[in-house]
Length: 120
Image 1: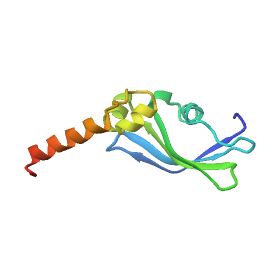
Image 2: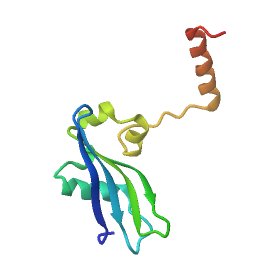
Image 3: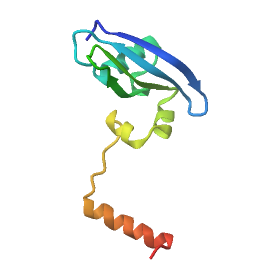
Protein backbone atom coordinates (compact mmCIF):
# COMPACT_ATOMS: atom_id res chain seq x y z
CA UNK A 1 0.00 0.00 0.00
CA UNK A 2 2.74 2.45 -0.94
CA UNK A 3 0.73 4.18 -3.67
CA UNK A 4 -1.88 5.67 -1.35
CA UNK A 5 -1.91 9.39 -0.60
CA UNK A 6 -2.51 10.88 2.82
CA UNK A 7 -4.07 14.28 3.39
CA UNK A 8 -4.91 15.98 6.63
CA UNK A 9 -7.54 18.65 7.01
CA UNK A 10 -8.98 20.69 9.87
CA UNK A 11 -5.55 20.43 11.50
CA UNK A 12 -5.66 21.84 15.01
CA UNK A 13 -3.29 22.04 17.95
CA UNK A 14 -5.07 21.14 21.15
CA UNK A 15 -2.85 22.49 23.92
CA UNK A 16 -5.15 21.38 26.73
CA UNK A 17 -4.86 17.73 25.71
CA UNK A 18 -1.24 18.17 24.52
CA UNK A 19 -1.91 16.89 21.01
CA UNK A 20 -2.45 17.79 17.39
CA UNK A 21 -5.72 16.56 15.91
CA UNK A 22 -6.98 16.34 12.37
CA UNK A 23 -9.23 14.63 9.87
CA UNK A 24 -7.37 12.12 7.78
CA UNK A 25 -8.21 11.50 4.11
CA UNK A 26 -6.63 8.48 2.45
CA UNK A 27 -6.83 7.76 -1.26
CA UNK A 28 -6.05 4.09 -1.85
CA UNK A 29 -6.85 2.94 -5.36
CA UNK A 30 -6.46 -0.77 -5.98
CA UNK A 31 -6.54 -1.81 -2.31
CA UNK A 32 -9.70 -2.33 -0.25
CA UNK A 33 -8.35 -0.28 2.66
CA UNK A 34 -5.14 0.67 4.46
CA UNK A 35 -4.13 -0.66 7.87
CA UNK A 36 -4.07 1.84 10.73
CA UNK A 37 -0.54 0.72 11.49
CA UNK A 38 0.64 1.77 8.01
CA UNK A 39 -1.12 5.11 8.42
CA UNK A 40 0.59 5.68 11.77
CA UNK A 41 3.98 5.02 10.19
CA UNK A 42 3.31 7.44 7.35
CA UNK A 43 2.05 10.14 9.72
CA UNK A 44 5.15 9.68 11.86
CA UNK A 45 7.27 10.41 8.78
CA UNK A 46 5.11 13.36 7.68
CA UNK A 47 5.08 15.10 11.05
CA UNK A 48 8.51 13.92 12.29
CA UNK A 49 6.97 12.21 15.28
CA UNK A 50 7.21 8.82 16.94
CA UNK A 51 4.77 6.14 15.82
CA UNK A 52 3.97 5.30 19.45
CA UNK A 53 2.51 8.81 19.98
CA UNK A 54 0.06 8.58 17.06
CA UNK A 55 -3.51 7.31 17.24
CA UNK A 56 -5.71 6.73 14.17
CA UNK A 57 -9.36 5.75 14.55
CA UNK A 58 -12.84 6.00 13.05
CA UNK A 59 -11.77 5.07 9.53
CA UNK A 60 -14.72 4.88 7.13
CA UNK A 61 -14.36 3.72 3.54
CA UNK A 62 -16.35 5.71 0.98
CA UNK A 63 -18.98 3.84 -1.00
CA UNK A 64 -17.30 2.32 -4.02
CA UNK A 65 -13.95 2.19 -2.23
CA UNK A 66 -10.72 3.91 -3.10
CA UNK A 67 -11.11 6.60 -0.45
CA UNK A 68 -11.28 6.54 3.34
CA UNK A 69 -11.74 9.20 5.96
CA UNK A 70 -10.93 9.02 9.64
CA UNK A 71 -9.52 10.87 12.59
CA UNK A 72 -5.94 11.19 13.77
CA UNK A 73 -4.21 12.42 16.89
CA UNK A 74 -0.51 13.08 17.47
CA UNK A 75 0.36 13.46 21.14
CA UNK A 76 3.29 15.66 22.17
CA UNK A 77 4.59 13.02 24.57
CA UNK A 78 3.95 9.35 25.23
CA UNK A 79 2.89 10.26 28.80
CA UNK A 80 0.22 12.60 27.43
CA UNK A 81 -1.13 9.74 25.31
CA UNK A 82 -1.26 7.42 28.31
CA UNK A 83 -3.02 10.13 30.34
CA UNK A 84 -5.67 11.40 27.89
CA UNK A 85 -6.34 8.59 25.43
CA UNK A 86 -9.35 6.35 26.26
CA UNK A 87 -8.41 2.89 27.52
CA UNK A 88 -10.07 1.04 24.62
CA UNK A 89 -7.98 2.94 22.05
CA UNK A 90 -4.81 2.33 24.06
CA UNK A 91 -5.59 -1.38 24.02
CA UNK A 92 -6.17 -1.30 20.23
CA UNK A 93 -2.74 0.31 19.81
CA UNK A 94 -1.20 -2.45 21.92
CA UNK A 95 -0.47 -0.26 24.95
CA UNK A 96 -2.57 -2.14 27.49
CA UNK A 97 -4.21 -5.43 28.32
CA UNK A 98 -7.92 -5.93 27.93
CA UNK A 99 -9.65 -6.84 31.18
CA UNK A 100 -11.96 -9.70 30.34
CA UNK A 101 -14.67 -10.19 32.95
CA UNK A 102 -17.62 -12.47 32.56
CA UNK A 103 -21.09 -11.02 32.11
CA UNK A 104 -22.06 -12.25 35.56
CA UNK A 105 -19.04 -10.56 37.17
CA UNK A 106 -19.88 -7.27 35.46
CA UNK A 107 -23.49 -7.41 36.60
CA UNK A 108 -22.56 -8.29 40.20
CA UNK A 109 -20.09 -5.40 40.26
CA UNK A 110 -22.73 -3.02 38.90
CA UNK A 111 -25.19 -4.08 41.61
CA UNK A 112 -22.58 -3.67 44.35
CA UNK A 113 -21.93 -0.14 43.05
CA UNK A 114 -25.67 0.58 43.28
CA UNK A 115 -25.60 -0.27 47.01
CA UNK A 116 -22.69 2.13 47.58
CA UNK A 117 -24.58 4.86 45.75
CA UNK A 118 -27.67 4.37 47.87
CA UNK A 119 -30.11 2.81 45.40
CA UNK A 120 -31.99 -0.16 46.98
